[in-house]
Image (tube, rainbow over all chains, first blue to last red; front, side, top):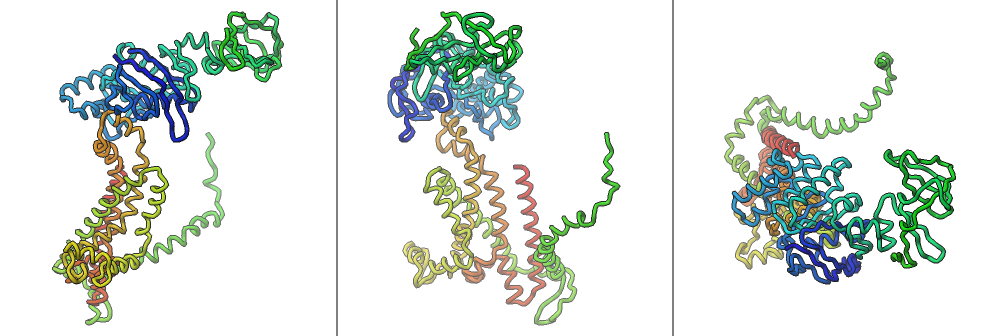
Length: 327
Length: 298
């Protein structure tokens, strides 16, 4: 059992309240991703779960046990840091064996576990190298290997891919997905600001904003039925078009749900971004912000064209003056 | 590909001379205060020059070096200098490491204390030498009463005790050199990423295990290199032991620097002193070479 239950959790740094009344249920074996803008508290929440930060109020349970005052090393967790945090004076093997050595595990058991993890992550040829002799992607794998060796109930990732270049990020993302499949009992909590990571890896996504949980749901739920203006604007790239009305309500429509060519509305193409498989056209429709339209490449209009457009009414998201979903 | 034609054009003399003119003052000063005295000392070490016998130096070949190796008092000073050097560095490390660990916090007090800790380093030897002599004075010294209370000092100052004088001056020498080590260690400590300690905490390392597996490996090269530099400085010390005890009591604090000084100004044998300095230079050259090699390895 490795479910995580967060009840009314608060975290203050001095007078600043970073996390406000967080409630969260993470099921055993689930892959949950925290997303949100910089400073929303997602990393702090992860660090509270890890035990690196003490919580200021509320309760935190891991596997049915309240761990508010349990030190990080006794929580049954392992963490992969953004900077990898490999011990620079130890070889890959020593890095991975360190936690087991500290709890005086038998030598043979350590060797077996390290060899297992190394095989899983294709690290066997590098066991005697030092972190400085490895590439970024290899270091990342060592960091994951170090966590696997601990055989944790809960795996925590703090923006593990943000130091990698784009190609490596895609490859490592796939590896993490495979890792999750090979460890079905292990709960994984993952922090990122990258939506693609969140959408592709998560069973459920937790969107945080200014220290509060905005919405919890599967990637599809968040994309199709955002419960607030914030989630609507945050999830999806390019962003959802949000058109404000006089009465303070907002109408949202995703760029791919708008059809150009015919319809009751008209706009002038201000500019076009060509992305290969598709393009984004930005229409001036007399509002503060331009209307973004996603088009396949064959249908791309020219800058300066005045075009008609329409959208199916069932694809429209409506929000009240408080920014909450109404339909 | 185009072939540059600049080689065939002559540059104006001013262009060629300017860089030389700009470095000339520095080169001249270096020649005057380092190179020429060094060559003079080398030349002098091969002269036979006892001022009471002949007012002018005459060629003596290896006579000074032969005398030097046969000089029992000098050998004692030589070994004492090693005790002095190693002792000074040991005191420096012993004082600096805990202080650096204490000051490696982001608090106002730590920042202020980091500046204050420089005081012994910037204080001239003459000031702190007399200050410590005053503290250890048998009539008025505050520290003397403390030592007396613990039975370390009798009725006369600890500086008059041949056994303890060297120990206390070594401590003062280390205390003066300590700030440099503290600053170097602080810089090394600040460069250790905090996430390493967090990873170790999750791995279950105790504070002591974190110190030995993360902190110590990260600062040991700095400690070694700065220790060598401070050791080189300590090796040719003269001022502190001279100010405190004039090399006494009974030569107990006579290090090579003082032997050399006495060779010139008490025994009137400048060529002999030059030979001592040449031998010291050779030893220091080896030490510097080692320290440079270590730095490169780092």
